Length: 87
Image 1 (tube, one colour):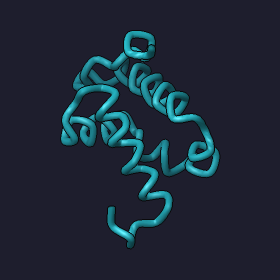
Image 2 (cartoon, one colour; image 1 turned 90 degrees about the vertical axis):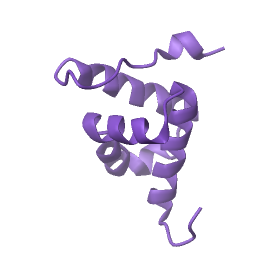
Image 3 (cartoon, rainbow, N blue to C red; image 1 turned 60 degrees about the horizontal axis):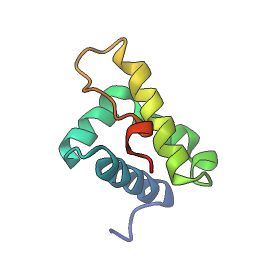
Image 4 (cartoon, rainbow, N blue to C red; image 1 turned 180 degrees about the vertical axis):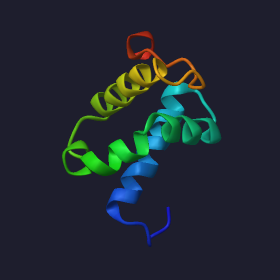
């Protein structure tokens, strides 16, 4: 990772990569999904609290936002259901 990234930027990249692994989407698909659903803004706005949370909790929160966004944005792909992949 680039050392010139701020801690908030490094965290955002980390979460995007973890969501990519979690959802089995490509990096480009995750980037598009995060932009459309406002996830990048969510991470930026809640960084101080979010970066102290458990990774599974963060991914669940993101998935909930994506699910809620789907109701107003038809172009979003189907969300991953945490219950289906948690083990």
